[in-house]
Image 1 (cartoon, rainbow, N blue to C red):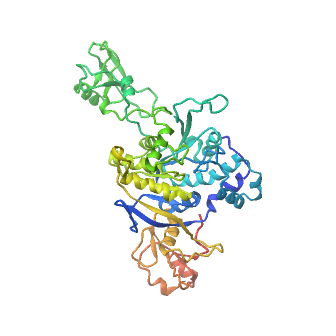
Image 2: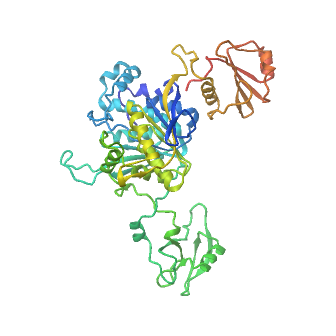
Image 3: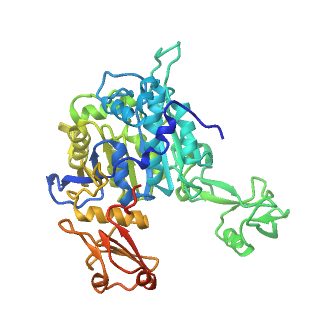
Length: 521
């Protein structure tokens, strides 16, 4: 498989493992149309570096995100608007200097962009569910490079397609006498379990693919679907002879057993062609259809111009040059999520993804949850503010847009779990430390236990985190007698251990020293 090399690659391919783990600190909950300190929502808006934020999401969300949509910088070099669409951002330049080192001074614009994207994509891959999909907006500046690093990270066999969407209707001489009307959305799955859904039937598709109702098939527009099976296909088929109304006979491998076929005949669900002697096909009505396959060319979605109008309607002005329209994200969500999916956008910008999630939930009664990450200072004043307006309703006079309802918690990235000297940061709340340790051991979300110091049990192993902020803890026989959970093996974290090795072997006890033996990920 072709791979892409660039200056600094060797420094960033595993950098996601070195990113400090920071806790998420809730600032407020927006619910019932107002802010409060009540932290009860599955929706999150996080202000902070998205690389660190993605790392902080792992204990709760690894392998649970059904759909990721990101609209990263296109690396055009344009510095004149609020979303700084290049890789010369001061925070990024500082990061490159720390991670890549002196080599970063020689990096091209494309090298820097790839160094920025690679570790973020690695963490997004971890967060994506086995049946999930990621969609990435991009244009010609980095499309080829993005395709190659996604092939490397997600696997070339998990490439779904490159969607092309018509981002503007007007012709304009953008460069070299070419009008750039389209952009790309690269789509990858996590595994072969991913199955994109059919789209709703469009009027155009129905007109093109379905026949008008008639006396034989009176329940609306319909179309015939083959029920034959090719020889040699896995799953086989059912072989028997079918006699047509005209008297012709067909002996084939059929998709249905004979009793099921006879039931279709009884229901007047079989079409034998105009002359009544063709190979039988099953009749499906338009109103029963699961939908139509999605095409990789999207010319039926509103354009960036409408996306700008949405921002103006929300805020009275437009500081975003090319905001994505809500309907574009809704289209992605319709083919990639169910009503209870979790959706992540780590380049949140103005918050279009949350807007789309809330709109879709209102349309179909879904309970989808969103997670947004935005590093810029407008995370609260624009990103979160937009979501508040969508929830409450917005607009003027007769153009008022009804609110969707919903809620979210606004977070800031907080303290790192480990200090520079590799000691535990005692300012971090104990439940956050427990959550981290439990995740490193089990890759599962932490749930508080009734028994003191017990993190939980898995595969007949009990995990204890014997930690006190103000004093040293010691694993000894006195502490052992306090354990209440019965298990075949015990893993106990503590500051010290005074147990004899024979005793530990006898009771299948594994000691892990705090903080030395806490895994970093």
